[in-house]
Length: 114
Image 1: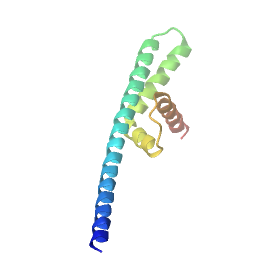
Image 2: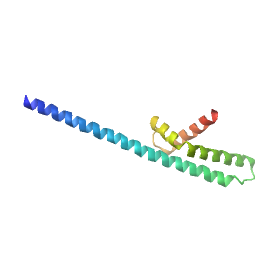
Image 3: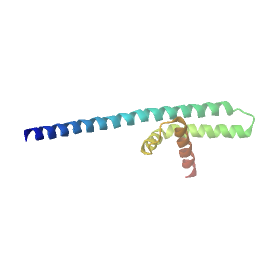
Image 4: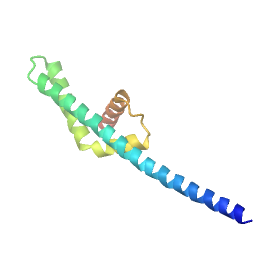
């Protein structure tokens, strides 16, 4: 009888430890994803700003419009960085550069449609 109680108590203790470690792992994973998504957003902002800066003095009206678009995107990504990160975490977006960039583009054009 004592052996059964001891084994059950030990199993409850081990399961409790696993639950604590698991929840700590989820919090750490969320923090890592937040940092990764933020780095991707910052890279995209820098890329948009550099394209806008490069093309804003072009003689081509089409390229100047493209520069304006890139500048607007950079402003949007910078202003909505936290919202974008939260949406990516909620949607469990796979942390791959091309998927993050596609998601960001989609969110930009979705916000323009409103």
